[in-house]
Length: 330
Image (cartoon, rainbow, N blue to C red):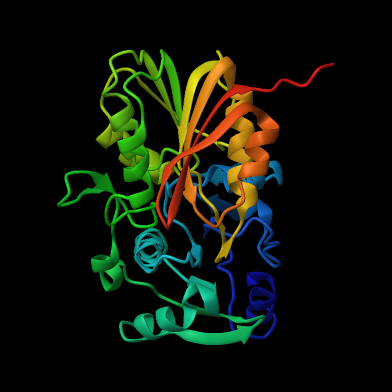
């Protein structure tokens, strides 16, 4: 991870922090320690709410987007190449240098190293702990200008951005869920993990819905949802769906929850969403959920709801309806 490589770079590897000024760290992993980087000079830049809260709890200054010019910047590469390029372009625009780029091999750091080397002179690279770190001493924003990207209107007629789930088109699991939703959903509804708002836009075609809560941990995704869902009944929450609670209990929760942590399938994410849904619903509330067929959600559903059933699906996906959340006594 970055800690081993950053220590190596600062301890004889040729990397030296500027003597003064703020240092931006773009999207660091939550378990990073950032050795050799003075906390009082660091500003964490991340739009993912759980990571944002984590770094704030550790005493770091945090923002969802870069707000100033920096003396140096560190970019931790995300998995999506288009998102990684956009982060590098933004960091280059915001820093006078050096611009440090770090990532695991599984994050595509080797490919990014080749791409950056074609454009400018690099220092390093330093290899350790299944990854690489390299830097540009005097970055020029124009060098990466064509990599810059943000929310944009697609040919499909919706706004999305690099790194947002299903950025290139409508997710087929969400499309299956939309086709199965009933005509009436109740007055108060939530879309957990709302993404760029595809499900929410369809939920708001139901005339009985009086308020819809879009709950999304990704700040960029929620910005896209604000473009795609302009109905005044929509309320936007930049929040961790695993811990979010509504002020009043809901009639219905609709969701297509995430199921990946890094590159591995992690059903505990969806199971946590299920617990949020059960807590948020009133005694007669209902849940509509779609999931990949291989994910084991049945036992969790049965432990949280009095009535559960698989109501639709195909070889890839299964769609659940559950109602009457169970309340623990005492």
